[in-house]
Image (cartoon, rainbow, N blue to C red; front, side, top):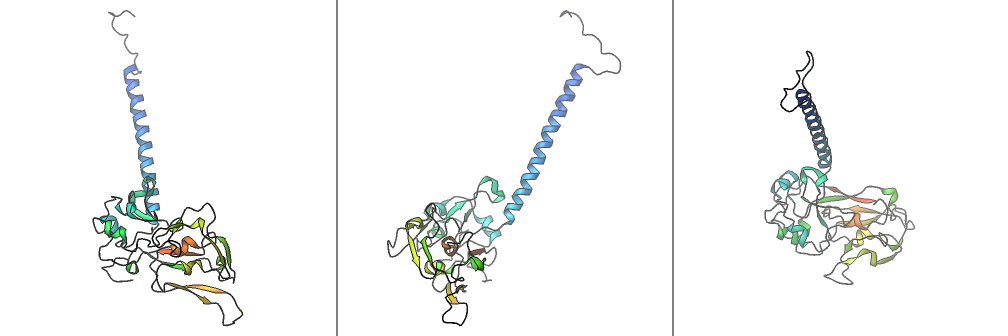
Length: 262
C-alpha cells in the first residue's frame, strides 16, 4: 500500500488491528495485575502466619502490642549487645520487619553487659527504662520441653563441647574472663552429671536440679525452673541435646516492668 493511500476498510464483523492490539494490551495488564494482587495476598497471609509465632524479645520489652508500636527499628540495641544476641527481623518475616528479637538456641542473652545496655540504648522506651537489673526482665519462662532427651534425667554426664565445634555462640565464663564473652566451642566439659542449664544460668535461684526419686543411689536429676526465671535462653542455648531438651516459652503479655506480673 502506498503512503498516500487510505487504509483499507475493515471488513464487517471484524475489529481493526488497532482495536485488537488495544485488547491484547488490556488483557496483558489485567493478567499482570492479577498476578501482583494474588502474590500480595499470599505474602500477607504468609506474614500473618509468621507474626502469629511469638518471638523472644530483648530484656525490658513492653508487652508485644505496645512493643511493636513503640519500637522505631533503629537497631541501637543490636549494636550494644556484647554477645550479638539481638537480631533484626528480615523482610520475609512480616509486619515486624526490622524489629529486634533473640533466637536463644543460636545465641542467648547471657547478661554479659550486667547493666542491660540494650535498655539504656533504646531511645523510645520500647525496652522499658523502668528495668535497671537483669532480674527484672520478663522475656519468657524456661520449661523442660523434652524430658526424655535430658541427660540429667537419664542420670548421664556429659563430656565434650556443649554444641560442637561449629557452634558460633558466646558465653561469659567468669573463671576465664569476667568481662569478655568466650566462644562456647572453645570450652570443653567433663561432667559426671550434666548440669549445663543450671551451671550457666545468669539468674540466681532460677533453676536447679532435683532428684527424680528418693533413692540415694539414683543418679537421675531433673531441671526445676523456679519463679526467678526471666527467660533469657541460656539454658536452651547450652543444652547439649538436639533439639534442646529445655526451651523458653516466650512471654507476649505480662513482661512490661511497669505492669502487673502474670
